[in-house]
Every structure is written in C-alpha cells, then in structure tokens.
Image (tube, rainbow, N blue to C red; front, side):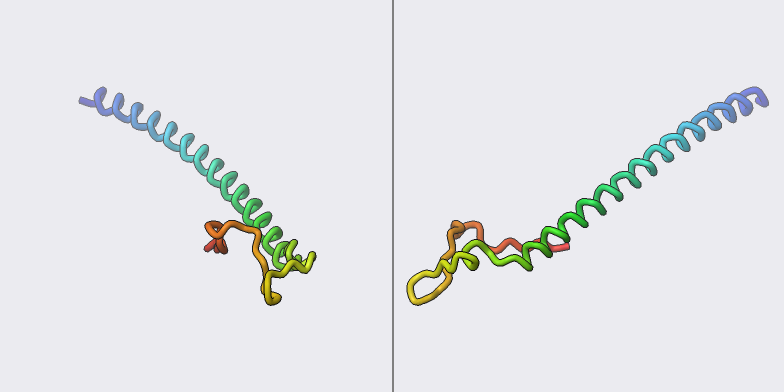
Length: 85
C-alpha cells in the first residue's frame, strides 16, 4: 500500500510541475498579447485623432453638390462606421 501511495505521489508531482510550466507559458503569451493589443489600440487612437483633425478630401477641394450641399463620393452602403470600445 505504501509503495502505491509513493508511486502516486511521484506521478502527481510530475503533473504539478507540467501544469506550472504550462501556466507560465500561458501567462507569458497573455502578457505578449496584452502588449500587442495596447500597441494596436494606441495606433487606432492616433489615427482617429489625426483623421478627426484633418479635413476630408471633399472639404479641402470645396466639392459641393447642387445648392451648396456636401457631395459624397463614398458608396451609400459604406455609411458612417462607428467603432465601439
């Protein structure tokens, strides 16, 4: 009986070590992914700010439709895309 418990203890210790190793790998992967998402989020923010502060092509060229209304060259299906965070 004691030998069986000793054998089981060894198996459990090996499984525990393997689990710790896998957890460490996953934590490193999670940190890498989080850093990547932060960089992407920063790039998105910068581009949104640049686009918000820059007049569109139509505004720069003064392109207007009949009656002085703004003309759009974008297809109607594109519409305004709103990104939610």
